[in-house]
Length: 112
Image 1 (cartoon, rainbow, N blue to C red):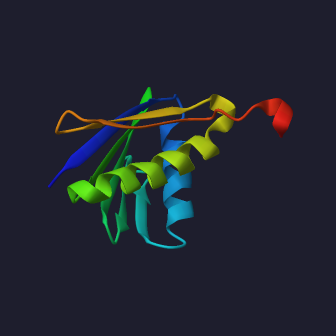
Image 2: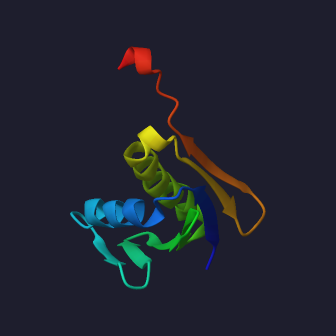
């Protein structure tokens, strides 16, 4: 199954993964384990996995080729919003070599 991965530099990876799973769990099946540092998000279009490493949150989405952009978008967009203060950047890399979405908080603080 086509796959896209992102490595998000942060020293608070478990916190962000837990927050993402809790938020998404309102609409889809989502789980997060504090003990293992792993979680999953199950969308109708595919799945996402979350893994907390000491210096990064490792993300992967899997689904049909036409669904990868949407999966990247929903996971990346929400994570960047949660991590705005830490200026998180989510840069997806697809297993077929195509570039994926890049998410960052480009909002001008003066416009807030």
